Amino acid sequence: MEQRVFGRTNQRVSVVGLGTWQLGADWGEVKEEDALAVLDAAVESGVTFFDTADVYGDGRSEQLIGRYLRVRPDADILVATKMGRRVALDPALYTLDNFRAWTDRSRTNLGVDTLDLVQLHCPPTPVYASDAVFDALDTLVEEQRIAAYGVSVETCEEALTAIARPGTASVQIIFNAFRLKPLEAVLPAAAEAGVGIIARVPLASGLLSGKYTKDTAFPADDHRTYNRHGEAFDQGETFSGVDYASGVEAAAEFSKLAPEGATPAQTALRWIIQQPGVSSVIPGARSPEQARANADAAALAPLPDATLDAVGELYDSGIRAQVHHRW
Image 1: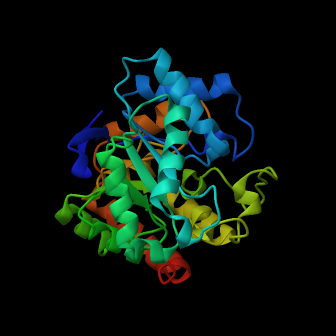
Image 2 (image 1 turned 60 degrees about the vertical axis):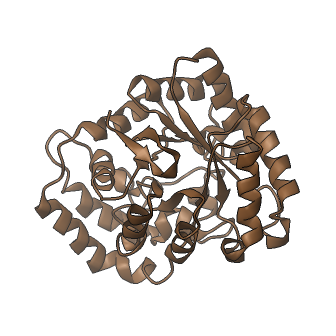
């Protein structure tokens, strides 16, 4: 699989990584053996980048990754985790002492001395303007608790503020065919600064797979049920903030753009991969088959200009008015 230089780390990551929110069982129960099989399928398919967080299953996702990498020391994986969502979203809590405690917990969960990459996990907006916060992150690097740091953001404005910080290695942002706003300023700014871009929610919580209908029901413990209107966390994390019924209709149109031999989900991933400035896209997978299918998107031929234009037209016709001004 194609490997790209990852921001200011000088390391390389696969263009298709693996998001592991679902392995924490926050999208419904996932057995340990099934989770480990997903990780293995991804690695065998060329994935070299895992994204997790200390809050995914309250550490379960990190622990599973640590368990897997202990039995696969040959797997050359860059593991990105996140911190800051296990406490109240209060800027006063973003202190060096807390950062040390939070990263020590993640180091234990993952079974490593130094974390490859730690991202602030969608912190309150004022945090991005705090010199003390970024000084604390620099201290964690100096203490070798972490090798590098980045941020996971909700808005383009937060991303641009983080990119301007000289120590920021990467920015993780919601970016997909139903969320085009990062194309305007964030991706160009990141490319110019040498900051990596991690594209999350690449399938708009599964909408872009084309598998859902207006009548699809999700389990009660799936965020696509309990956070559809932002009840638990930012609405943009669920279906990219798109109204579900409208999203299903748009996804049906998107499915028609898939080239022969490719699924709509693979087409959606291929679209992200070829956007300038993207380092890695991190779809989740609940089965080894999904992990392999996601990885196969990296081998697709680049989408033609006509398809790229059609994606833009689809966004402009029904999605832009819903989400563009909010994120």
